[in-house]
Image (cartoon, rainbow, N blue to C red; front, top):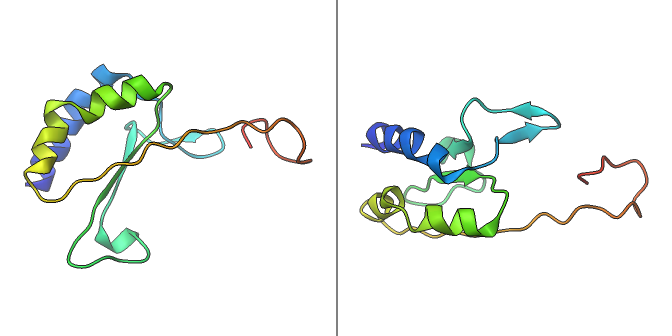
Length: 101
């Protein structure tokens, strides 16, 4: 079931215009998200928890994704929650950081 849902994510997500998923400075995943399973999460939560991590240019794009059919399919699997966090670029007060903080 997870594999077919990830196939739906792979097909649908690009139409919502997510940013490339950057893991390290200028290193990107092949797909615009990371899917984190139970063995990769710390601390682990019982019974099972998965994370679908994405990056967005605008909050409105993320909100459109959260209202999508694919997200509604996720609701069929169990409890779904989401958090939207905004990146605040550094104004230069911390020496030695990249411009993106």
